Image (cartoon, rainbow, N blue to C red; front, side, top):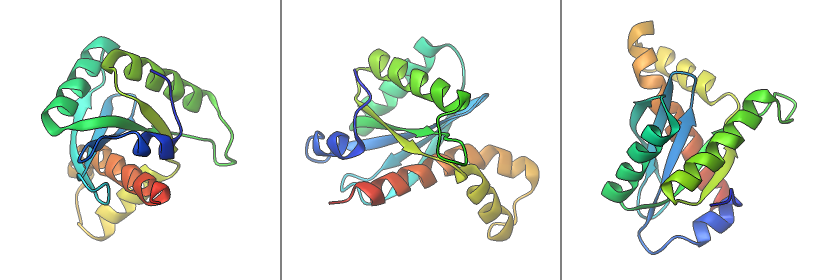
Length: 154
């Protein structure tokens, strides 16, 4: 499957299909899930980053279980908005995951999502560094997916 425009991804969903938000990191992949109205994103969990086939199978299983019809994958653009090596790697990974799962995907700028989530977890939730490390991946995925839902609302 190809990486497509976010609005096209949203428009191509069947009624009551959800979107899965993925924030791929070096060690873990944060996972978030939209509601069926595509208004609200919630943290779902995290996956240990491993072989593509294994991660794709886990993502496909979540999609089947939760009724998701597409993926929104975080794109770590450089601060000046350009595609650096990390963004190119995320784009390649997104295309491979989309092909392996059979789910269409769109990329969405996720600059500073982890930093924003970390600030919130320190200020609002008063979590220790160890507890933040567990929560930040899925919360960053939800933060990114919520921004994508808001940006693509018609």
